[in-house]
Image (cartoon, rainbow, N blue to C red):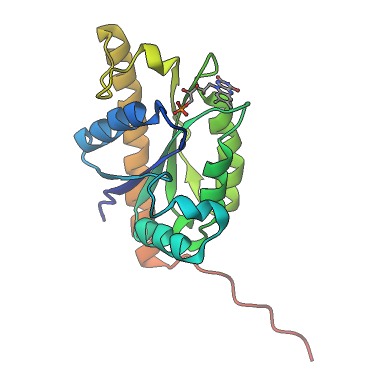
Length: 198
Ligand SMILES: Cc1cc2nc3c(=O)[nH]c(=O)nc-3n(C[C@H](O)[C@H](O)[C@H](O)COP(=O)(O)O)c2cc1C
């Protein structure tokens, strides 16, 4: 069985002063602890920012960063009961890089803990031929919970989050390995166009 280790962790926020970095730092450290090789993809990176206006070079750079990933984890805030608009634009800017890949979803926000953003993303990601992992991670009021370095400060909170992450990582491992094998056995491509009759 192939091991699908390369996970691209996509940040959901480009807001100045965003809390996203803290949550993503915790997520990447945890994924590494579970044997994955996480890489951060930051939509606010100056090389990627112009994906937002459809710049072809920026989109090519985005595709190159996502090429060959075994899976993705999106770490997103909730804005008005959904994912941030620029995250949607980033997702929409890529096609084949998503296909037949698992996507894990981590949300955060106010009282919602980002759960509505997570559920909104499932619908979008299904359209892009991904499999979203059923188990998710959710953090309400992360500004009270993570320090500047992305560490959960309360021991009970930390233990609960690590237990949830163990389940999340276990499911992500199953899907990354299974789909890595499946893509080798049979490329995920488009069906042959139907032949027109006489
Ligand atoms: C425009 C906007 C809309 C928001 N809407 C929601 C919401 O619907 N539900 C929620 O729980 N939190 C909501 N929040 C709170 C954010 O999820 C919270 O501030 C989060 O820390 C933002 O992530 P960021 O700092 O990484 O950008 C909203 C914040 C903003 C800026």
